[in-house]
Image (tube, rainbow, N blue to C red; front, side, top):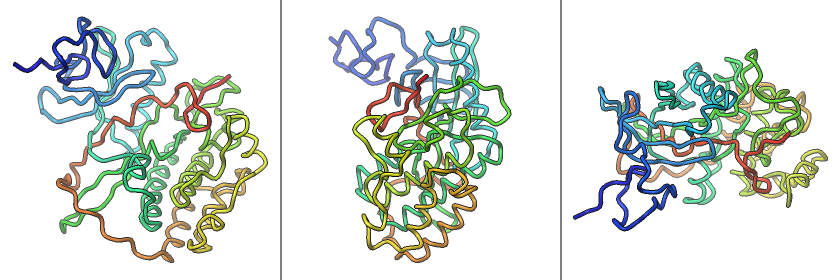
Length: 355
């Protein structure tokens, strides 16, 4: 007789297990899997973070799948955390771009559980995709990054600054067009530490928020003072990394990284990848400027320049066929990458928050 599904992760374990091997919770404690949370039947755990967990769930009436992000119960009494959590839902839902995750619902239940329901698709984030496939073809990289820029253009039009653009927050899925051809679709995830222009500030003065390796100089000093060009700097760092296989700035510690960003201590892209066209390298270099006024001034300007330079690249090989591709207009988003981005930093490559 098979063991029943764990109420904490939704998977079956050894019947003798005292704790869920995925979450560490005691099996005797109640969990969400197999229960109904508001309108949603919770099926299994997708991912966890410092502020909450994400579950695969179905709407009780329509049976449609969603990714359900649930805030930890013990954080419900923290007004700033709860406000930021609910603002993420409002922020993402207000944009309406196919290149940003689509939020379909958000609520605080009568028994004080806060959740956000998001579309669910299958695929990988860019970080996982590169780890699995190796460095992507330059033309494929340019196409995906241009999609990111289109999503950011829509967000910036609404006064929304993401503040944590990086490969791990870019999800890549596939869809078929009306002719049956497969295309990759990039979506920007996780608006958990975003800034909304004109909204009441949640971040304290002098606080840095983001992932250090992708942060512009102004973001290290005060995350309240960032603007759209800060996101574009992060896009340029990500583009450099995808093309070269390494980040433009690095350091053994966050202070060392900050110093390298401050003085501009890095190698040139064309020095690392001599085969890349000079105009493409120039587009990336402009995006990496320390001073905002010297960078690309809008996501659309950056995208147009990148598309133009990308015309000099060879055509990439066709995508390997996938067993199943969701039809266009019915794509879903995998929320495993939507867990919190504000967490304790590891040197150089994790999100950070400091006073």
